Amino acid sequence: KQVEYLIKMVSSGGCVTVDTMTVRVANQVEPNAPCDFFIPNAFSPNGDGRNDTYFPFTINIKEIKFFRIFNRWGELVYETRMFGEGWNGIYKNKPQPGDVYVWTAEAICNDGTVIRRSGNVLLLR
Image: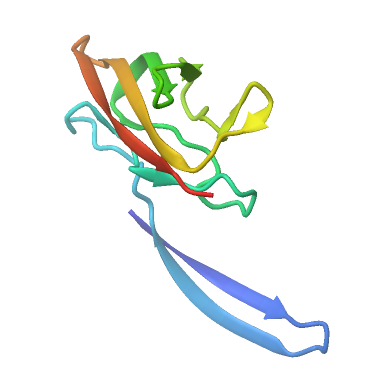
């Protein structure tokens, strides 16, 4: 599905710019699409509003059993079971260093199938 937006910007000096932007809605799922989740391979929790949290994008999943992130010493630094909730790069109230972290996830599909995935993520500072 694509949605076209009309954008109007006005500068502090009164200059007006008008444009359109077409946005493709990617997380809208067809009912027969296969169950899966996608997890980016990097994120940058720097507070700029882009890629500040790290979480799985789900397709036809009814439950996340767990989404866990571990540091290089095998220490669990984050865990959730909630859709759309993700890690902000903080552990024990401290921003974690730029490094490679390991994630593992398990979820239940709408049809009851269990899927498991694991991989690495690069935290960029």
